[in-house]
Length: 157
Image (cartoon, rainbow, N blue to C red; front, side, top):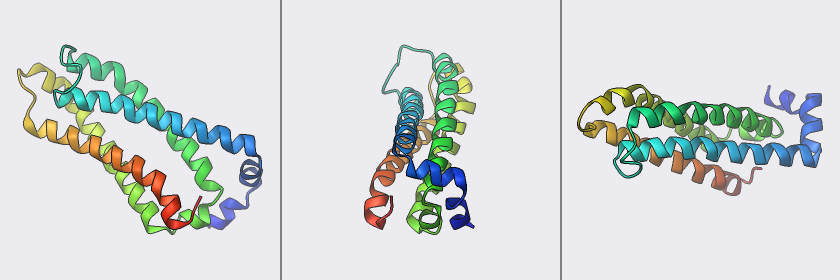
């Protein structure tokens, strides 16, 4: 199935046209950092480390739409990059681990976004909220590190 994806016309054209692949790679990395950087600002605010003078609910309301936009663009561009070597990437267990970390990071971000207005209404953000924000931040960092190391470790990409 994955090899069939690699052999489709658009994937072959995309993978063999240097400027296309390079452009999508740049888009992927920029949007990934845009997404993670945006979410990190909110996580750091929840943890009481950054933007302490800003209202948490206001900050989250302003930043999360940008973060989710960046995530959608990163997923789309990531799929384009994946498609060019899908047969190699799809069965790789370390690649699966990276995908699991992304899903867990997204789930933590959703929890932070859902609870941010409630936490902002309280005089003190609950400890479990700070822990979730810290876990989200750690997972995003691990995702970035794994994404940069997997190709070297596995001989892919």
